[in-house]
Image (cartoon, rainbow, N blue to C red; front, side, top):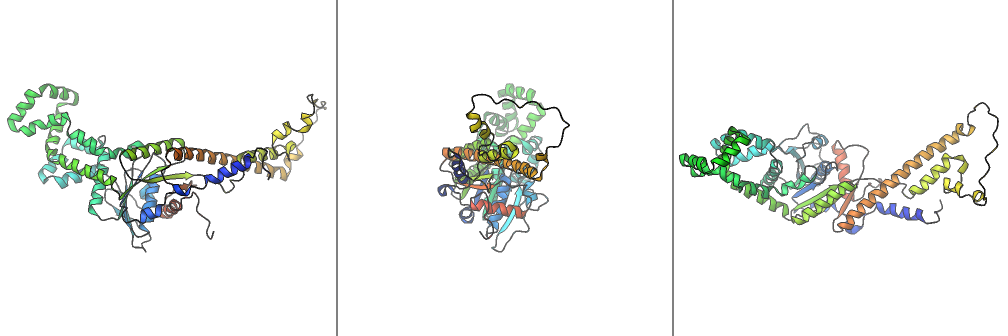
Length: 454
């Protein structure tokens, strides 16, 4: 196939070839990260629908089959993680995954954050039995622990801290919720401190701190206007439930803040690695850039970017332009052998040398319609099929070029971020074999795995 006059064919081929290869300076090497005994926590974050859960599970499986004792903690309530690991359901207790190759001595466990159960465990562990019973039975506590804004992120911090403190696992892989809330748990200690030190909490704690009748007198006289307004807005019984809850939890507030701060520091420690997961799409990589910048601002250790669902082609030397021109040639028998498709007819010497518009042929008497012998031949059927495939190939090349431009914009903005790519798969991953395949792709740093024996 000869190149076009402008050389766009070679340029497009080089561009597509470059789309398949990452600069060695920016390749994220997954296996050394997972094998390093100093790496104790890997946090996968990113926007929704980019494959964080699958990535976390694949990383956990790969580390386990290379000798590490791993637990994967998902904060995403979707059931994909359990299904891919052959577990009926996940809960707040780590469950060992069966079918993992343990020849190297590793293990894989998985669990899903149960926000309310984690909160209950904290109360039971840090309050005496009578006070714990009072807290657990408090209506305001039950509402708070079941879904109060921000509770999930704080409980994720608590659970991560619990897992790390037990020292039962070599590696903890965290699968975070979708969208920007994936990093909200970084704010949990600060938000909790603001809440506990807020004016409303101090008002509600005042009667308990003063005690007895004096406390009630203080509340009724000094804060009657404020509590009156709150009572009208929230309801008298609800306000009483809040006051009872705050009084019962007062002795635990310091522990909440201390543990949250300790976990925050743990996330900043050298043994933690953040992986930003994205797809080669504009919105997903825009979110990835946000995560990268936010992690840098929080002094969190970023390992790199996992670029999921990257498209490739084994015939990327055939540019979209040449494929479309060839399709036009096959679809219109009048322009067969014209390299530039219909443009070749428009620019043919016969038309260029004529100053007049060609006369239309004389009208022939109408005759009964007959089948087009050209359209009926097997050769023409093959031509039409080939033209359709060429057009599909052209669409594929346009998609590859668009993905490459999007990725180039991200890497130009963040050249310091190492990247590994994973190819787009024809279907969902639903078992350990699929996770193992994803792990291998993550480790190669290339979208496609090499052919066996290559």
